Image (cartoon, rainbow, N blue to C red; front, side, top):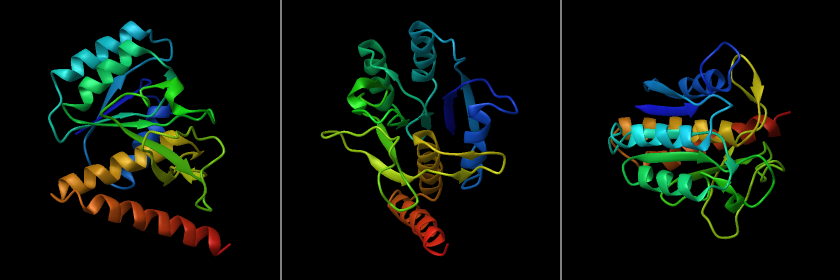
Length: 191
């Protein structure tokens, strides 16, 4: 199960496009945990509390967004990361990710964006000290919209992780990422 912490689903919502991306790579069940754009930190905290009692070890929580750093939310995301796999976007501000929640939280998998040439995308947050998984995420055609950013890369990672877990071999995750990146780089080199 993938729990997507994102805005409520609509035909033009961020969550809809992320679901399209995920479903291009896996058929895993996705449950949207609604976080309207007006969500307060307390509202977000309550949603995480709810997830703490709901998730299982092989579930994935995808947070394809970043907000200004908040210590209390960092602690909750860290606790959630001890219960399941939490995949988060590095953020699209071209700043140190240490300024943003949930990317700076412990026990989360941070995903940044490479451009189609294999270089860190100019928009992606970065870190000198925290490990980031880099996945191509610029000019991605979800079938409904062309998107770029760390949310695209995080959605791809969540899909590949889900696929590896479903196949019972976490080692396949690196293969799926490499296969996808090679396809993207081959596509750009053929132009």
